[in-house]
Length: 120
Image: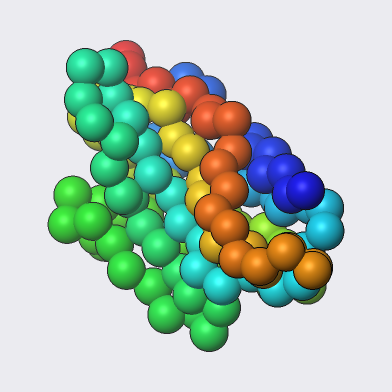
């Protein structure tokens, strides 16, 4: 099995920065796409940013220019650098990874979520 463990959430003032990390561990053969999603209270989960194994990135319009996704393939870790945070960025942030599991095939895995609150 594969586990994704997130860290780095917290409370920050508007205009501030946070860096989220998500490390994958377990029976990992390879990881294709990785990404960050978020879910605010009363809203559906939405994609924030994704990155392929070749480091091609995509961003939601609402975060483009403020957030940067990156990954360290040697550490099976994906990061989300969040700058110029706004109150509307408040949500639970989840990481996702599309993993080839040895002897089993490809599966999608999710982290447990980390709360990001932007408030003065």
